[in-house]
Image (cartoon, rainbow, N blue to C red; front, side, top):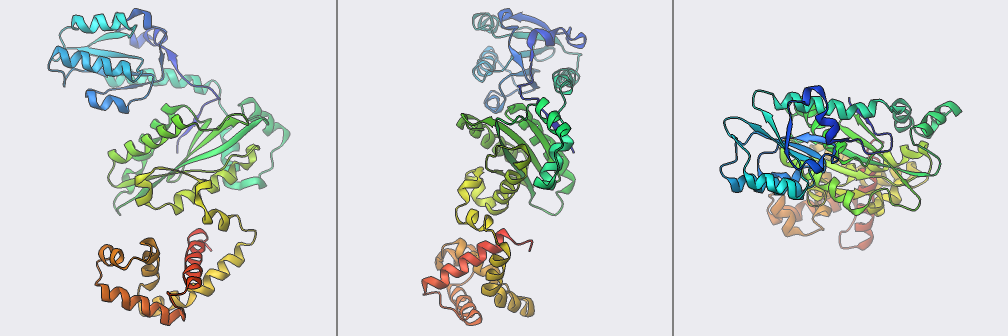
Length: 408
């Protein structure tokens, strides 16, 4: 389990500070000296021009030159790095790069974009690790009471916050004049043999989230990553730019791993820190109810977009809801259990494809007569008629309640 604490500000270091680290004194700036005040937020090692657009603002990029075949390739990767607001670019002099082209040096000086060289014998991974630790040290100097936040997430509003605990929260930026909201990344495995890769995926996703710097705390909980967001009443917690960054992060992570998919959900805003448990539960409901197919088209969903599901979830008497669902669907489920049929799952698919028999037949690989037979069978078991609007409404509502409260 990893935890990242932000302390309410973007964690970054000036490039000049990075170059002053003893282990980094092997780095030599050869152009763009006026850019030494640029902020370095992390490191990357992107060799391909087309991939730089997936980098994060403030990345210090290391390049071996393996994919550079001409001066045009040189200047292209530098221009792209500048375009996407990287902190600078470091070229390793060696078998692939013997010298830096004049055009690259001129570009660096003209745009105050740092061009740096390093010896081939120095490992990029060593420098990257050193720089990462140097940047992360800013976080450790201002730790937040992470155990308090985790207790609130898990225990809810029943957690008793003493005056001392509240003081610790305030000292970390969790004050009474803020709005709090939970952004949740749920990692769902596709196959049975994907468990060993879960830790790797969590780390990749966690690193990407940390580089965005919009959250106050990042906590891994089992197969999900919780990001606690903080805003003010006059400002939305997440603006459109940040929402796009989140969608891109989920999409890019999805491109890297085939045996997992990432669901993203956002709960409502609350003006008390102890209410983040409500936002957490709402975000979990979003990732639970939004299907993988739908999220593949649009990765970011808010609790307020759940429509009827939201009404069901906020019902004051969930037991009444569950009882209604069981009265409508209980007979069908019992029939499936006794006869080993899958009529309840067929009914779910029926509504997923909006009652279109052709789509159901195509996607479930069933003959159209088989589709009709199953529908008539369900009508007989439940004593209902699909031609009646009330039947459709009751069945859809019962299935939605079942999705929301399936743990009961």
